[in-house]
Image (cartoon, rainbow, N blue to C red; front, side, top):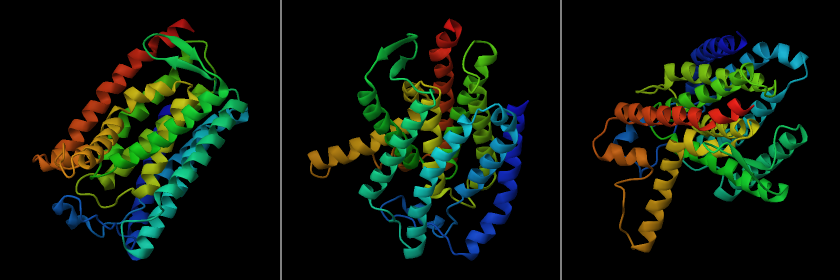
Length: 336
């Protein structure tokens, strides 16, 4: 019941906050600056309010406190750890967005500044999860229902870079109206489902708290899409996309199955790889390109796909791989 309520509360609060936030952002002239190197038709989006991620950040926060209250009374605060971790990344994104709005250009924090802040947040979160007994250096392998035992030092380095990579991959995916939020809906649904599994298997009780957070994430994104679907009235900005990336990465590690990100984050990975491949090939061939434009969603736009079609197809792919992820980890719960 708390899980369903969390999704509803988050949706309603996000929708209400959106009604108040968007006019406030317009008054503050917090408009998005569009890169000139992007598709030319995106220039019409210039000035659309950004930092809209604040609305689902607030909605999720309210929902997890209300719906996770009984769990907190029992001493389970794991959903708050995940939220606070995502909030740190959202804070980094907010600083970036603020710099862009202040200087009216599409550049905020430098890449080294972002990387160091994100890396520090990742290491702190991993150490907390380890201290709380939620995380082990035994790397769970989906489909095979087995583990690879690593030393804590090796695992920490691996995990920190996976988190930073995931966060930035979600950020790259946030390129057209409703894309990042829509693609993340099946991911949130997957983690909600996994949190319900302790009812059927002898797994940690705090999984239920994580499921409440995941359901709140799902509801918050649905509330946000009321304003972010094409044509978008507001963008989530780095405030929202870095929060989302932090939430997805944190959930994977909180459930102690980070390799599941390969499946649930398949779209994010493809988007990132397209960017890396494009830049590398351009440099190696002195100006040639593999994609018409990177990241991948822009390539399909340049091929003539509408934004709505790109969002629909990418979301369907995300849903398919999330369903595959359910199968991939099912043996873990059956074994329990």
